[in-house]
Image (cartoon, rainbow, N blue to C red):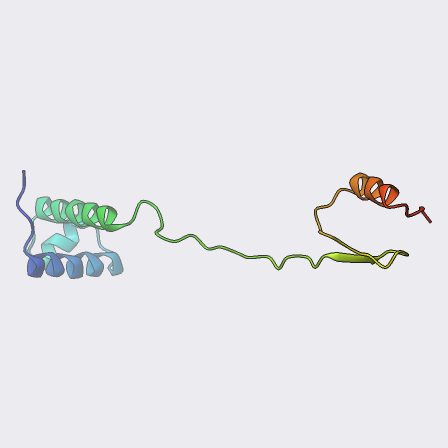
Length: 107
């Protein structure tokens, strides 16, 4: 098992890898210019990418929730003076049966 990287060394290699990405050089040419071995370059690139992957959460802690405003109930004033409040999910057939039981004739 490998020992943990020194944070200062890891930061130095992060900076080097960023310079490499900005350069138009091959790995070999970049390493020659920087005085590095290509083996060290590939080792650190793999190590830092693995650290970045392990630091990313596998699932979000919070999921956005979008609340919809509830539809206001429909209110029917019956000839008897009663008020009937009907929610937005009421089935029309059920409403028809209910009005029939209350003695309300269809229009």
